[in-house]
Image (cartoon, rainbow, N blue to C red; front, side):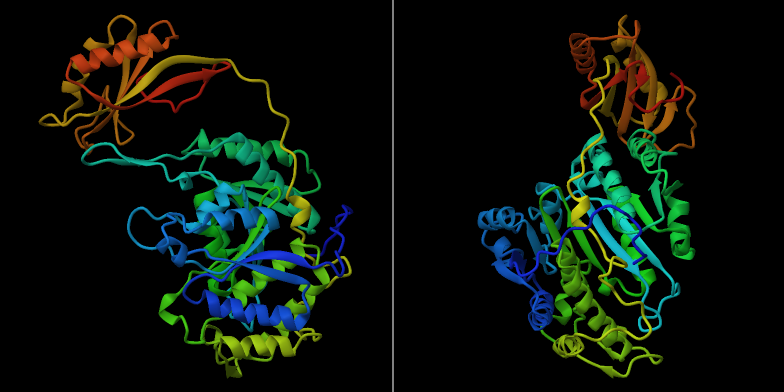
Length: 502
């Protein structure tokens, strides 16, 4: 981590207080890497007691579709912190991801993933890489709202809210400030998704103005991802939306050396969850070959969150010294720096034996105000003051049709729609998969059975009774809508994507 220069107060160490933490051992390799981490924490004298929870496969089999029993919810809410091993989500329909459910239900809005190279002990193409990805954790396409609308077309809704943008972006800036970072980069695709990603970008610009001491930049996600892969030194703290952050954080972890060693913190206003990034790897479960480093680093982030920076630094330095001494699990073995291949348990014992030692080559963690991760101090930040409610005005409707007439020719569909529009509306646009096919479509455009038909009110305003009457006329004409989206302006500004031909 970079040197901390912030004058803001750090969380005070809690001293001899014992922290009672929820623990889910997980599935697959989860139990064995959890045992390895617990051994290290015990040997270090970490002031934590764990309340075991049954999450994952056993809970699924007991009939809990999200893999989380009611008692687990109560315990997490009471303790405030969860250390979680990797969990297997059963294949097939009806099962929800434990991770996604916990993050959304508990308001764990910021997913924080430090990606730091440990070259040469963990080979990396970018030896100086030190990037933190702050990913929005609750919204975007991860709402999981999907529909099959026609025989050929399915949809997934992407939902972005101003409060969701505000708190994760504010968290990213506060994280950067409190951890001595210099720059915050926002990555979106708002050149295409002008409303959803555009909102995230606009909120970023608003909050950036509150932190003039930090460099702030915006990049389009595609070139931003390319630059992260080739020039990670250009980045420091990255904040982005849920889907992009999921992908970028895995890329960044692999660039730093290995996604198998990556850890993440899921931080909310009052609760936090810490976990390894990797999965449950059932193919190697029980073979004593898994690397426990990802979960160990997650446990250290947990200690820092609790104010136990000295303890976290001591264990972290012992772990770095173990890597320097060439005691590596199978996934890290390399000719240049590995001296002996060790199993999961042996690696944990090696780290415990080096408690009190510091690395000789890699940068050590310190507790004198430098190189200390701070998470808790960023967790309960206020939102921007709520803006006055905009004047909302309905000006039309997009009607989606399942229409599969011979030839799939929009020129045949348009007259039927125009007749149904009556005197209150005008047909402005027909698209197929987002491509304009009327007016002035192109014969080369591939058309499916899914059509968006835009009707705009003749006098720039329409009530719900008018909209319902239009839909009834369409139904009477044999054109049954499968979905509608009302078109609104907000203080006169268009609240829907524009379409050519309007």
